Structures are given as C-alpha cells and as structure tokens.
Length: 337
Image (cartoon, rainbow, N blue to C red; front, side):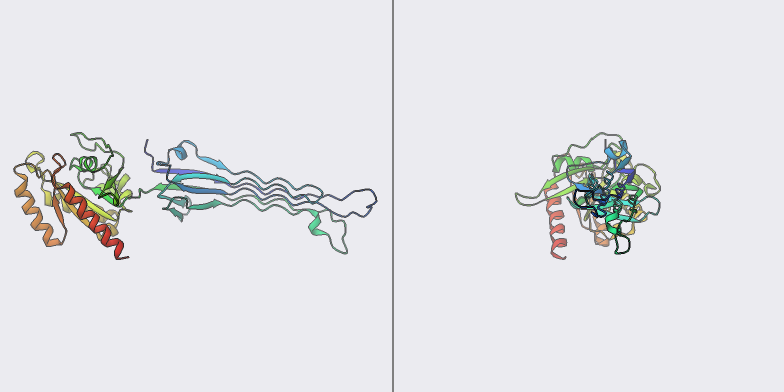
C-alpha cells in the first residue's frame, strides 16, 4: 500500500535525576559528597532511507518515545544516557510541526537526518553543590523532561521527470515501454491510483527516474479526481512530460484544450510548476487520423515555444526520440547550474 502522509506523536526521553550521596570509607571520615549526575534522555531522530518506499509504518504506529536517562549513583557515577530513537522514512519526506505548520526538515538525500525531539538534560548530583561553606550539601537536581510534539510527514517522490496529463492519455503505457516499471494499465479512467517510479536508460552510462502521476482532470487543484492527492509528487520533478491523447475520434477530446486545462491545474496548484521545462508527448500517432491532429497541436505548441514529439506507446514509435530529448534537457539543466 502506498501511503504518502502520516501524523505521529514523538516524545524524547526524560533526563535522569541527580542523587544525594556521601563517600563513606574506612579512614575517610570526611569523605564528602559524591552524588553522580543523571543521564541525558534519548533524542528522537528521523533518518531518510532509500530502502523505505512509503509511510505505511508511520500510519500503523503513531506514538514513539525515546528512552529516559538513568539516575545518577553514589561514587560520582553518572547515570547512563537514554538510547536515541531512530525512525526511518523514505527519501523525499518533508517533516513539519503539526501545530504551527513550520517545516522542520526536507530529507531529500539518503542518510540525511533531523532531531525532531531533544532529550532532557540530566540533573546534577550533590557533588556539584559543595562549597567551602557548605561541604555536605543535601541538594540535587531532577532531570529535565524531553521535548514532545506532533509532527506531520509528507512524502514527495524524487524523480527527474514527471508524466502528467488526462486519465487514459497513455502515461502508464509510456512508462511501461521505457522502463521495467509495471503500472496498472486498463481502458477505464484513473487506472493509476498511486504514483509509480521507473528508471529509464538512455545508454549504458546514463539514465533518469520517471514518475507516472495519476491522471489529472479539470478542478484537480480543488480535489476533483485524484489530482489533489498526488500533485505534490510533481513538485520535485525537474522536467514535465505532458502526455496528450491524439485519439480525438474515440475520446471526442481536443488535444489543445487538454494541454491548456492541465497546465492551468498545475499553475493553480503551484505557480512554479509552470516555470518547469516541459515537453509534450503526443500519444497514439499510430492512428490514421492522429497526424492531422498533431499538425494542429504542433503549430500551437511551437507558438508557445514548447517542444513536442509524436509518439505511440502501442508501437513504440519515436519513444527513443522522446528519451533523447528528455536526456538532452536534463543535461542542459545540469550544465547550467
């Protein structure tokens, strides 16, 4: 099950108490105070792991608590620190405070970590309070409580390329053709209900990650269809491949209008998406009547400065050219940094 949102409660460990103790040994009648300090409470740490794919574990278990520090002991023995609690989340997880909405961290690389709740400081034992005028202090400190908070976890997939478009435009078929990914493919709308990642090989040394985003419809930014739930996964994509269906005879759709509507939804969700480099994959060019539709679409796109490639997910026509164009765009973005 793909789960990309979770809310959890975390509590760091409490610090151990300091103790009141006096050194009592034969021949040392004035041994003095030797109460040790309490140990520090354990932290709660979130770590990005490439082995984690969803937030399902966080949905099933919502409360996490780190270990408390141990109390100090006589003989100036410090209490043991509490063990830190490490929680592993998928790479691409955004962590925010549920009460304030403040973003605490964006774990976009494997191994990145953030402390979301710090353990309490251990209390000091009475050995710390000895003075020339008070050689036998009978005071010590209690350990401090650990931090606690409710945090929201939001997964945004990390992909070089995001496939966007209307349902049944052919996004899943293109991804299946270009990679080893096996998204569900069927003739009814919203076949893809969760984002799917695939690795597309350009040659022996070069490849990129492509994400198939569930189909968008007009009003997706308001929650219509499935778009509102999964548009966040497009935000990290460096390039958008806009798949447009040329089969106007069967679907009674207008490719130009479809392009305008989907781009409008992207902009209403996040204006920065309209600034992302985009290439149109005009699908189903193998159909006899699709050539004329593509000619009209290409004329419109050329006027907007948007590149396009006529492809067929069914026959594989021009898919290699699409991969080369996307790879070229990615390389130019890397060189421009």
